[in-house]
Image (cartoon, rainbow, N blue to C red; front, side, top):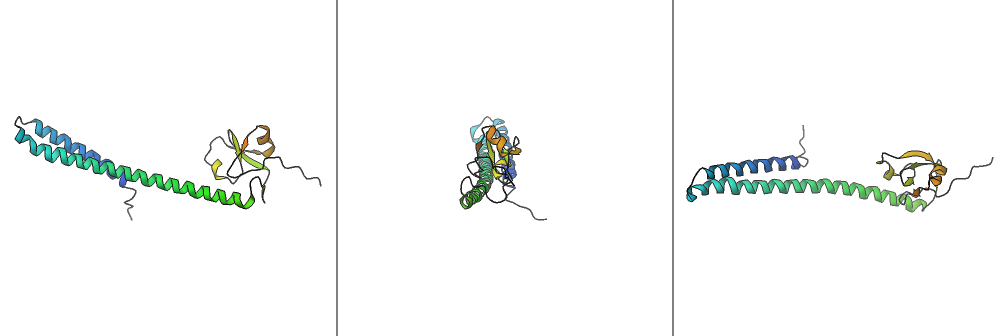
Length: 156
């Protein structure tokens, strides 16, 4: 069993913050039980200052973990965008390309090619014909560049 310590950063940060708050409360409780200022200092130093340091380290671990998660999400989005730009560069904007079936994925305001990754995360998307998308006045996706006009039926 292999433990991934990178994923434990957030949980460990929360645990350290809780431990720090407990140490601060114990220090406060110990200092409050004495009326003499010199007798309160050991409690304030051991509980208060050390507890505050543990809270700061835990908060820093939470920030670093959140930064790592955000960086991974951003890198994945950049990779998807780079793939989409490469696809658009090969076929050109508005190119129907091989394998276009005449169907698009329609959202609330725009329509996409079936293989467009931007439409995958949408709950309201539906597969419709290009004619219906144009009739609904939906805007074409700027990334996947679906056809802007209906494909004429072949006479044969």
